[in-house]
Image 1 (tube, rainbow, N blue to C red):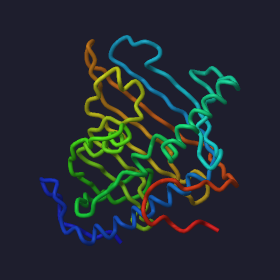
Image 2: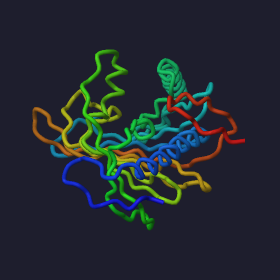
Image 3: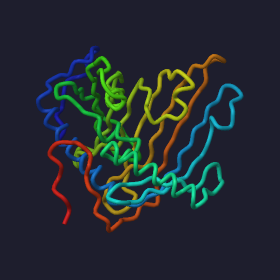
Image 4: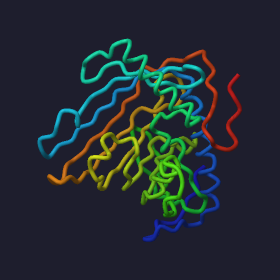
Length: 269
């Protein structure tokens, strides 16, 4: 069970961290299982971006549809429609090949949401923040305050890996009896997956992932969303970015587990 901790401190210093660290270790083990389970499914995705506050070019707002499937031991993201227009077979094949090449080069599947599955937590920096309800479930709220590190000197991938260390807070809503993260939220972060990030400066971005049970008793991603504002030479704009995941179905292809997290769970029979 989740330990009952004293009230929150005004400073980001954890209180009585031992029991909470032990509880969170089980939560993070469950997160690894979530990741491995995900890679056993074929599923669809709907991605959308809306920028409001001024007249923007059509390319800066869009809706895209994809299907994810296993190929050569990797999950591949294949475009289906862009703004309602069906993608041709040739364009699909080209996009799939390029996505697969990138995944092999990085030696991991870039689901563009590894921030949620792969963010590294340090013991001793958690705070228990009470209870909160979501979708009819009573959940435990746990906050995490990362240490702030300078960008490493190295490759662009090193920079990518360290981007989320600049977030000011991670908030998790957890189903205690299953040690399951139902929602994870990052405050004040400019996520790498946001499109057109080179056009603007991101301000005050909040990004969340919600997990659910769309098929059977398995927890899988339901949606990723990001809200906030951006600054341009023309002024301040509001941004809404979302990714919805649906139509999950099991695949009988065993996916090789590239994600670099220690002590992976035993494979399912």
